[in-house]
Length: 421
Ligand SMILES: Cc1cc2nc3c(=O)[nH]c(=O)nc-3n(C[C@H](O)[C@H](O)[C@H](O)COP(=O)(O)OP(=O)(O)OC[C@H]3O[C@@H](n4cnc5c(N)ncnc54)[C@H](O)[C@@H]3O)c2cc1C
Image (cartoon, protein in one colour):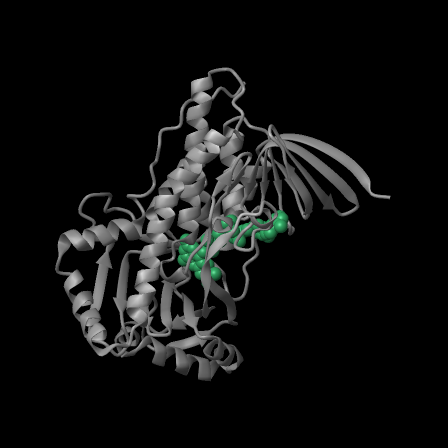
């Protein structure tokens, strides 16, 4: 017979990925009791190939403010000080250097390539030291949104758990069960592309440079890893991806070098080895609503965008920052009185604050893939001209640098003092 247990918690977070974990830490600091429900047993071991994310400098500042960055850095990451954008077979080339930043900190890198396990491990260590209750592996069976609370039923092994909470946060990724169960529709489309990932060694190493090669079938990115290799993300058609996954290493290396083009390969030197390969479907999925009374969506549950600009995780951290800013201010205004975190006015404030940033990043990412997807001869010529000229317009290059580094979008709000009695 299943054991039954009831838990009361101010906030329940579904999904213990990086977004759910950071969210839990932030809410714990605001003195809310928090439960995190995660489908799988958390693991931080390296995968083969490594699953990495490129974080911008805005995300670094944010994780530093949470006291997590030092440990992430110690576990090892690749710095990006230089980004080179090319289109194989076309003349243009665009260079972004961290040292070109006019208006902000020149000391830091433009971005950092971090293994998912290295990102999660310090977060989970901090969770263990906090009052957050982690329920994993567990699966949600049902939930009911009432006027003043949420009731969630779930199963963990033999245990049947019910949690009553004031707020339910869906951070359960692209195929969010919470979003579907709340009846929130999405818009977007399947790109009919797969993101093929692998790690490669090249003769000249990476010299802290990321290369983005825009091909008509989709971009191919080389991201510098801590150990001198590159992690590649290659957007390929389904037929191309099937072939690439089935090839032996020698054939794959040949295809990769050809796809990257002569200009990029002259900088990298020949590819000398390749890891296992894996692939992920690429899609655009944006929730029609990011929140309703007693429920909010964050991270990929709210928006999944094309990895062309490497912005998904960065956007997710900004969701967390915004929600915490809204809750902190509401809490500060209420003084010592309990501040109900699931009030619809707070949920609306969160949703309204996030829509603009998400649509701007999704729109920019979409236009990049459309401009580079066009094979119309005039457009191809303009692309070459455009890439060359971008480098010669300092204000425009600086704007792009600001976007790439993500420093402009993080608010870095000053957290009001919270009484931790
Ligand atoms: C190929 C590729 C390359 C990328 N590169 C970059 C990059 O360079 N930079 C960048 O910023 N972003 C990048 N992204 C996007 C980035 O990986 C995501 O935006 C980010 O992982 C989203 O984090 P999340 O915590 O919202 O979701 P996830 O990382 O998907 O985590 C969701 C968590 O919820 C759990 N879960 C799922 N369903 C349930 C359920 N029903 N109940 C309980 N738990 C559940 C899952 O087990 C998981 O732990 C890339 C994506 C891809 C596919």
